[in-house]
Image 1: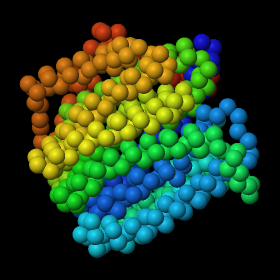
Image 2 (image 1 turned 90 degrees about the vertical axis):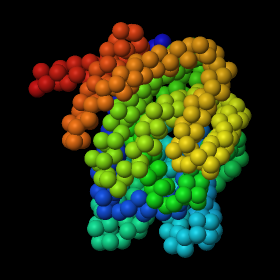
Image 3 (image 1 turned 90 degrees about the horizontal axis):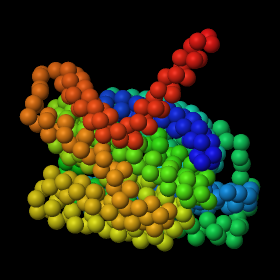
Length: 490
């Protein structure tokens, strides 16, 4: 367990930097979106979502799974890194050209001529972002998240300011488009300047054949997953309206923001940390079980807060024109756990190098979303949101079996680590429906509701002696003690 202790310290330090990265980036996004949501309309946000369908599907394709391969590889040569870099640039250029050529198709499909020009501009994101993909992976390989944090900070602040200025000047949907484009450009420039690594003019595909074999499976599975995920945009945008799509995406983005705070600081360091334990299966099982406990505890906590505060959060942050997003936000928040846990299970398959299993597991899980389409067509948007949320929970079942197969972690242990937090999550929600406290002041409502849910949730976890609660409590105490010791020295 010595490896675990050493990696725990490195992982915690990396998680701290990554959380700071996440916090500042999401704070920027939150503030900028808050301002833009009051300057622009739901239809503007929906229009950009339509234009970004291919971006959302293909942005991972630029990397082609090379980042994961580099992170998990014990030793890597200069020839391999240079070859990967030039492959990233080439794939990025191909994706840009493909999206550029598809611009008229988007305008025809959605019956919106203005979409063509928007897609033409956003298509450049692939080529621009490809210049910083490898540098980011090399930093993550060494658990260095400080440089990506600085690069993200620079790009996010500058792009946010540009978006607000353009929105105030009446540029409408173009405020969102050019803001995103500047963000991609500045991040690539910043991460490139912070990295000491520079590519050689060499391209030897034979030297990266193992990475290609590893990468194409993870890329194909991710590609399939994202195609199915973008059905939301295709179905809602086509059947309903750009405004309906804007409401859905705003609710979804706010829910993902909450998930990011509860989970993403752990997610980014998960693969490089677990990769260090790939030759110690006992330590790997222990670490995965610990992760399941911590992530389940945090996700159920934030999910409950989203559910009880949904109406006040939407109206306070975005105004009455976004009222239609409240119910969607509440439903998505209720099932947030279905978005967090698959990343843990996928990391296990990646570390174990079971990429065939990874591919077929992703295909199976993604294809389940097809069953939600009839609900959206025949019963409306709300029914569709319920359907994709419930299917998200069902999709967790295959992942339990893959983890057992990869590292021998019993399904019962996995379920116990997850379901122990469901009861403390549901009890305060049931009680709340009998209280229904509400005033005309949104901030007061949020404070009271948050305090109510948090106190009961924490108390029940304490009574049940749940490991996720104990671990998080220990980490908080550890950070506080270090801070006091520092102050005493000063």
